[in-house]
Image (cartoon, rainbow, N blue to C red; front, side):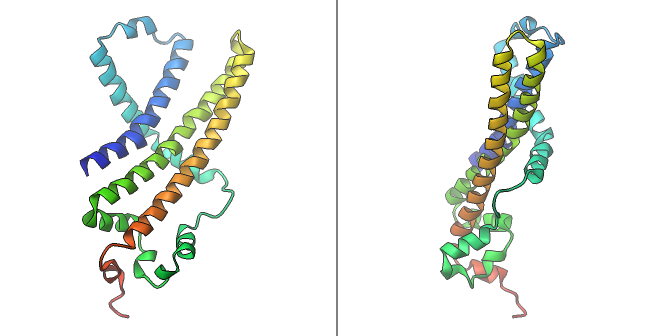
Length: 205
């Protein structure tokens, strides 16, 4: 479980935060707010530790931005995971656990099989990582548009703007897809947890 939590934090916070850090460093260097030569003279160990910590904090602070982008952007199709699961697995139609909270189901899977639960966690963390990496790509596209008027390489700036915009859309789409797969995987794994329906059965029925 320690490995799963570490992977979740790395994917969800540290990796997206590193994109924000790289973007802010580029902006600061272009605006001459920082001396890159002086920064590179910092001891390597301290520099690496500092970059990791700053990336994690930035990723944590910017997490709501990724959630907001994912929420406001339109979806091409419905994201009803439960309906898709039941369509593929008719035997689960009368199972009580199907309508339960997916995070509670994940906790049940963790008590039954930590390896399977870690697999679900990694899948969910990968989806969140892609989603949270999308906003810095959008900001980078805006920076590239600005560079179109301020740099000496307008063709390169336009190319970067297009690539970053495409990357922004692709990250959101793929993040949603992995999130959907994580929910499907949760339902599929919970199907095999012994007596799981008893825990969600209404005692009044």
